[in-house]
Length: 381
Image 1 (tube, rainbow, N blue to C red):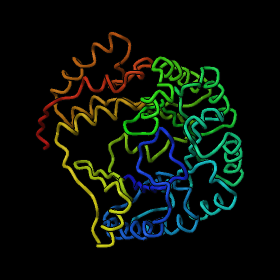
Image 2: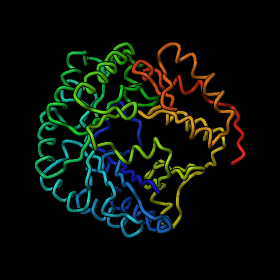
Image 3: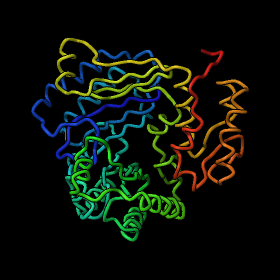
Image 4: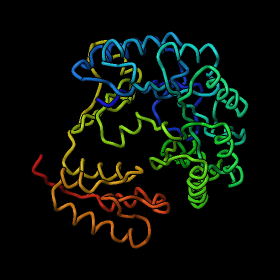
């Protein structure tokens, strides 16, 4: 099994752009922890040879007390085959990072952190309604290195209103100067039913400028490439040896468990997701019931998903692998489907792979969708 994802559904503040499942109230935290431990206990895991990655996401996992995080990780170890080589990641916000917490995370067994920086500028952080400030970012990044975390990542957001190109370049230069080993960088997205969407609709905040986003994404690719970072996925860059093993498993279509409210799981042929309600999640586990919905993926679903996730990666779509899974007819489908994008310089075919070019990465989802099929048949199904 590739990995385990654990969703921690609590945050100190509600970021205006966020549409993940979370609560800013900790009143039911103890009951939620009991429910999560029960879910881990009820989830069969010993049939697998090894868990390669464990990822605490959210929400804000670092909001939990160190002993609570250790308790959850210990229960995972007791229920699943986690080894010393397993990549174990904790998402953390800069304002939660203290010497005491950092030391306890290391002792508990975490060997990687993912830090929700988003920007090195106070103006952007206030605009997003983040709980931390720029000074806390710098102090946190120095602290985790001094405490012994060598493997860590930061998130940055581009295309934010008010973030001009010079300021975006400044964010990148700051990360490079600090030798951050891994960066996940995302264009600001206005999700439905978020505070940001409502404020834009009411003219209280400026809308996203798509030209600004495209321009800053191209800057991002060029600047990080010159600094020696490998862009191994549309939104992820790493110095040599620092790819995220957990996220890579998603893009390789490997199986994973999802634990906690709203968490998703995938076994290669079916997908399931837990209920996105802390109260109902707790109630269900109190009755020893796993609160999830499940769907079987059709051959069409699996074909389309394989196109989508592979095209996002540096390696691209493997032609031989597609033939093995879908038969010789897929050769003509891929050739016909990709030719217009090859002609426009957005896709290249080399080394038996179809890959996006620098310009093609601006249109990744749109290009992938043109290859989607409404019905797929294969002898293996």
